[in-house]
Image 1 (cartoon, rainbow, N blue to C red):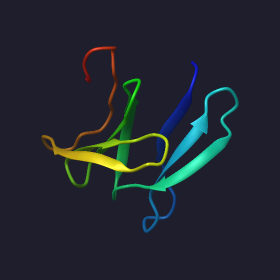
Image 2 (cartoon, helix red, strand yellow):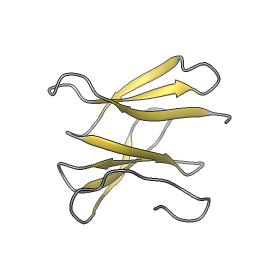
Image 3 (tube, helix red, strand yellow):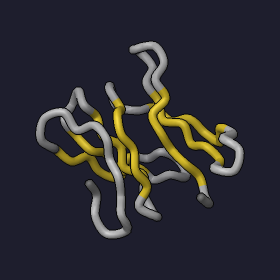
Length: 89
């Protein structure tokens, strides 16, 4: 895998965050605030998408700085997420 990874980092309940990691060695490049209950994460080649089970949403993030580009309502309890090159599942 080339390029950075981003995933939920669960700490104490008052401080959820997303960690941006270097794929080659797992070094933390940056950490950004997250929604209340991040659960799944996927990268589509341009944006990072994070599910939040507490708010029933999926949030689109810019991976370079964690800025939220959009938040979208989902059905109850979105958890895992994957991207196959065309669609999310």
